Length: 96
Image (cartoon, rainbow, N blue to C red; front, top):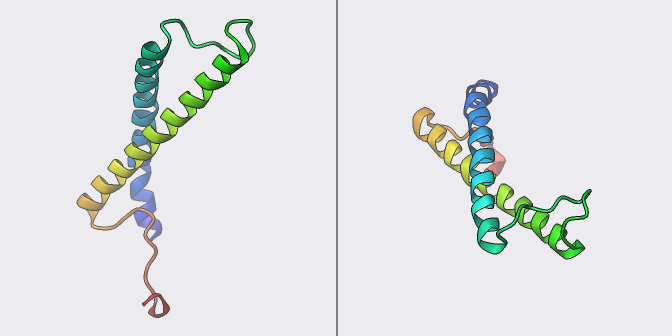
């Protein structure tokens, strides 16, 4: 089991980088459709409280969704190539 997780580490690292870049790209496209201006940052006086909070909630949701989609895709590819899921636990007699 340890060997499978060790073999998956390169997939996980590449997947994290791809997911981060994909998430940024998707968020930028969504934000430009919602509001043409730059994303307001909390430490500046730009935008109201609602706009700042909404932009960061949207960013967090998009990033989490993209990360989950990419993680699942990379785990599926790993399973296809290796024949085992990266976090699969070996079944025991009691698991049925």
